[in-house]
Length: 379
Ligand SMILES: *Cc1c(COP(=O)(O)O)cnc(C)c1O
Image (cartoon, rainbow, N blue to C red; front, side, top):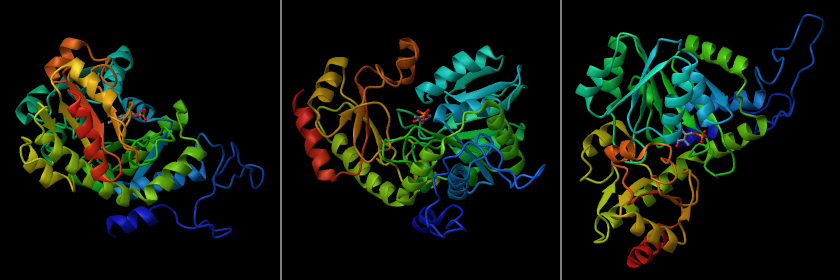
């Protein structure tokens, strides 16, 4: 099935009792037993809820996985994955992860006795040298946040699997429409559904997709025990968002390319980070591994003062954290999404004080370019 069709039809299909084409929002915490000792397949909504299951099936199909679990947030989804590990195990993680994931790993996960180390996963030799005998999980993002470096997911997965290490890919930045990590070798895909999957900036959520049914069952047991489930109202919203995901990603992509090309030729812009530019050092890898380049664009305007001026002058790009909604946003990673990463660590990664990150929405690109042009003229 083609992507646009899959987005519209993924999930269980019309509800059998009434034929409702959309899954009802099952606002129920519990389910009546058919008779003593015999439930009807549904017991309690922490364990399973039909609206949540409809979303989980849809995302599993979109990513080509066997099963999925929907969580209360992207961070809850990532945290549940760390519960697959035991004290003494080691997570090898890519070095410029989403700031919240870095915070989770370096505070909570480590406190629970799981070792975590970071490596530039775009450098395959460095990656290979960083596995330890007790490494159980490789945690990757591609493109990375916010510098848009690409990790060779197929090669990284191969290196991990040679050592019996499970591979997790956070696919939030591209969505399953533009990248399918399971097909490239990953064992798990994680999404903050808050971003492109929902797409309308009106609900926080997360999902993990598992390639393998047994690991999926294990994750459902963790979710049922720890309880960080997505509620049925939010599951409904995310599923509704998925229906237009392919259309939205095409519009995001058009805007992302236009904005990146515009910034790349602007004299006030020091540097642009976007895998769709031929000047991006891993452009060829992005072409091979992705079905598009997405709509996340980072650029450097040279200083904190300049970054502040540009943010204040922009009108269509709202200064806010988050990404992946229909509206364009701008953020300043050093003081916002990556404020929890220590300054020296941040600068080593290239997250300078002059760096701005755009989430290009689905507005007409001409209007977005005019807004950027006006804001940059203020420098
Ligand atoms: C937002 C985000 C997360 C965290 O998701 P929440 O829904 O905010 O908890 C994880 N990874 C990436 C890449 C994100 O952008």
